[in-house]
Amino acid sequence: MKTQSSVSVRLQKSQSRVYYARGSQRIQCSEGQIWATQDGNLRDYVLVAGDCREFAAGSTLSVTALTNAAFCVTSKAAPSWRESALLRHIREFGANLSSVA
Image (tube, rainbow, N blue to C red; front, side, top):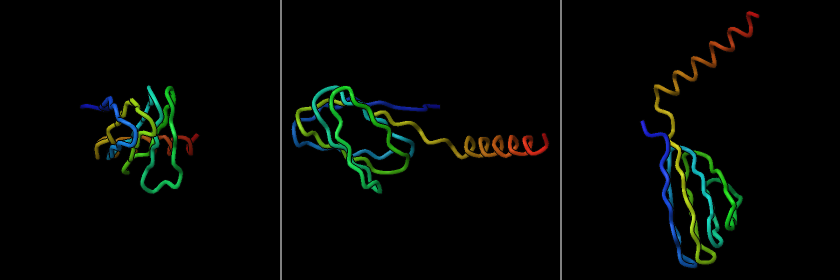
């Protein structure tokens, strides 16, 4: 099972890209300046070379180059329904054990 994927991107000033991932997304700026916005989040982020930012799962992320820029987008896969169910059962089991102790 693939848990994450990465793509390296180069944009000229004023060019944009849009990303959607069910899982979380991480952007690492390696050159120039980029402006990142996420649907449902009122904050905008300006990242410069060396900056990194994690974005919540399940939304659209727009990235615009403020200067010629390079960055990497890493998308982490959302857990499958089986993994989610297993994690839920583990949390419930752990909660039940702590109430017994």
